[in-house]
Length: 114
Image (cartoon, one colour):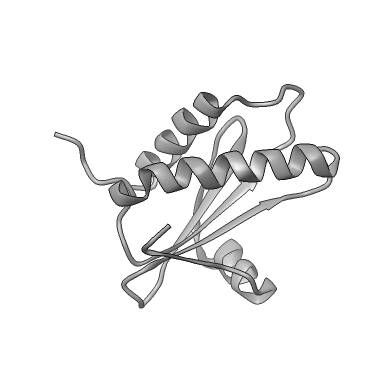
């Protein structure tokens, strides 16, 4: 993740949740807020409702890897937070990829493919 800096502080997450735009999917919700820097800042979170620590960490790893693969197609200058949602089934790698692209398109953060 060359052009992305991690979000770590709670107040940064809270600011994005309050002021940012969001769209929900089946496995995750995406929050986005424009920042003043030329880089993206990424945060990934999963509450205990998602499952035990093994499941939460697996979903966060899947989200992080999918983000890394499509990072160059994402507009710069945004704070982005992915929130894993409670689901009865464990999402596969491709499910996360499809949903991530869908959510990024809905919030106009993905470069238009020609």
